[in-house]
Length: 72
Image 1 (cartoon, rainbow, N blue to C red):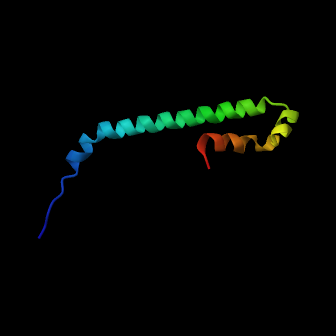
Image 2: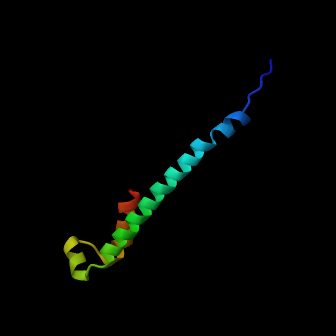
Image 3: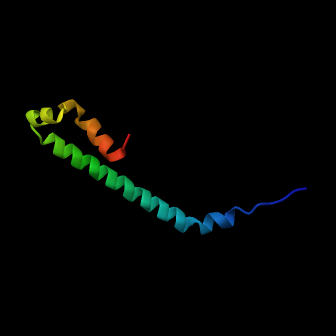
């Protein structure tokens, strides 16, 4: 027994949902990037002494900013 599935109709009706998901994901990524840049800027502005007081080396700033923005 054969059967047929219509996939064209569902793809066209899902365009608003897919567009909304794309915009939402783009907003999340932009927020993450802003957090990364802000953290990077603030830590880079500290002196070596201030960083040492926090237990941070200057070489760790990139990874700390990345973890703050993107997790993990």
